[in-house]
Image (tube, rainbow, N blue to C red; front, side, top):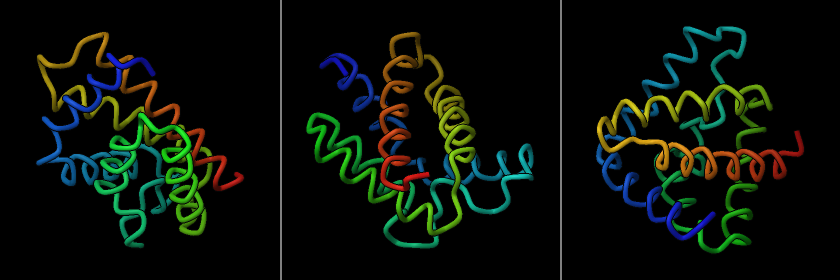
Length: 135
């Protein structure tokens, strides 16, 4: 990621951080309703403390400038999610849905550059988590 993309992700994350828990819960409910075949387990399962969605996302964003640390933490989260029943399909549905929810939450702050930056960080998260889960 470029420094500009990292700055966009971090600044927009700060804007949504106060309501991030509710945003993730809403995404999970939407996915459960629109993709019942995925069952109750989603890539961010809030039951284990190690995979608290808000804490994990915030921590990964704080580590995005240190790729080895970022990948290590994401891989660890991927292992936890696998134990909770997450599959590669969960990631394919969750992160695009979270991107859409961020766009809605950010309103006028969302633009093509912000979208590209978030998609890139989510792609990096997805791959790192899948690597950790060895799904």
